[in-house]
Picture 1 (cartoon, rainbow, N blue to C red):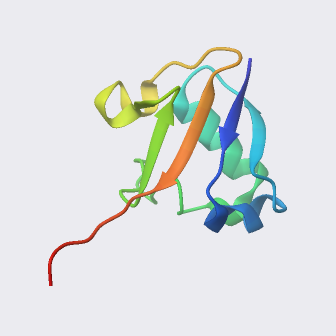
Picture 2 (cartoon, rainbow, N blue to C red; picture 1 turned 120 degrees about the horizontal axis):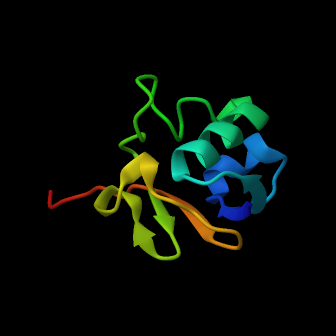
Amino acid sequence: MPVSIRLPTVLRPQVGGQATVQIEGSTIGEVLSTLVAEHPGLSGQVIAEDGALNKFVNIYVNDDDVRYLQQLDTPVADGDEVSILPAVAGGAN
């Protein structure tokens, strides 16, 4: 079941400049593993070396943050949209 993955500008060079890619999988973990397998330049940028979500990116399935769902076990369905967004940090000087 293909899902659409929207990539931020900073990750697009690793996928040939594409803004969106189609990936098969039934969970976020499967989808992200396949994404990294097909585009090795993303290794370490989406999934950390320990297999967890990289803490510097936020992953959404249809506007829901997977960190508040089932994380890598969050199910995805045909036609779902997965968004990968860089985490934004900041504060007062």
